[in-house]
Length: 355
Ligand SMILES: CC(=O)SCCNC(=O)CCNC(=O)[C@H](O)C(C)(C)COP(=O)(O)OP(=O)(O)OC[C@H]1O[C@@H](n2cnc3c(N)ncnc32)[C@H](O)[C@@H]1OP(=O)(O)O
Ligand SMILES: CC(=O)C(=O)O
Ligand SMILES: [Mg+2]
Image (cartoon, rainbow, N blue to C red; front, side):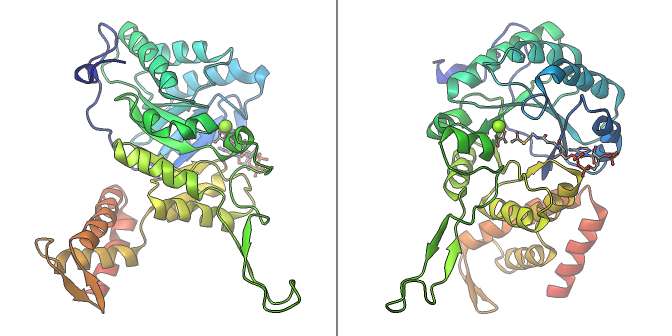
């Protein structure tokens, strides 16, 4: 364990200085594509204009015999594409795989200046982040990079959940954490067979109304992921990094996808993964606060003046704590609106109507 004084020291001679604050550009959707899939790769320049984050996936969902093609495909796409303000991320193979060392060496050396964040799957504890941290510093120094690469961990092992706080604080490179519900379910020996989302069998039932135990009893499906998402959000917020919901595998069920994303948004997540083009607009809609909420937040902030004391607005008490919540919503809205004139107009129109 390094001394706390050395936390922000570069881990290799010539590596860039670690950042003291994680940048927070919009990252409502992390759009996954397989760089070895020619049809998907051909769509990248157009998709890049619509998403906050584009992620070249090298890990699961890429066939073992396509791993090298995916890695080389990402290098060539990164070199030949202007991503504008869209961030470029990658998900490398897991640390115990035969591919990850070449993934990291090739990507940092060839396109380290184009990549923003490296997503590391199946992180079990701080030791995994420390390994990647030092290796990245060595590779950055060799490649002459001036901006440090950031690291994003997937929370998808039982050990990872048990150690989520130490993972979140393991390095100044830590940018965020995503829930990985599919591998996590397997690691925990859950009996689901899905990629994220709910399960009709996970429910609570109202009390019996009489002798017949089947009569008049309503059931309510529960959220399998509530505990983990809430823990992840706390670990991230406590360490100044960003939490994300991960994938929703039922591509056809755009309704339940929106619900799952909204639960995550309300609990504090900043975005989710889009696995298919149809999920991009769902994430954009859910992770941009609604115009009504923004109008309300701005009104509370305006009426609360210096932010202290208590006032009544439409029958609801507001004080120092509620104005802080309103600032979270209003500041997110301002940041998103700065790059999106349509959203800015919707927020301003709702604010005008509410005042
Ligand atoms: C548990 C985890 O690790 S989740 C993360 C790993 N998984 C992934 O990354 C999956 C990424 N997504 C995919 O592989 C695909 O979307 C699939 C397999 C789910 C569905 O693919 P398809 O069956 O081709 O879907 P569909 O026919 O609806 O696709 C329509 C078009 O969108 C394209 N498309 C599909 N997904 C994507 C994507 N993520 N990015 C860009 N284009 C895509 C298809 O190539 C197809 O193109 P075409 O019209 O030129 O033929
Ligand atoms: C996201 C991911 O990798 C998983 O759910 O396993
Ligand atoms: Mg996984």
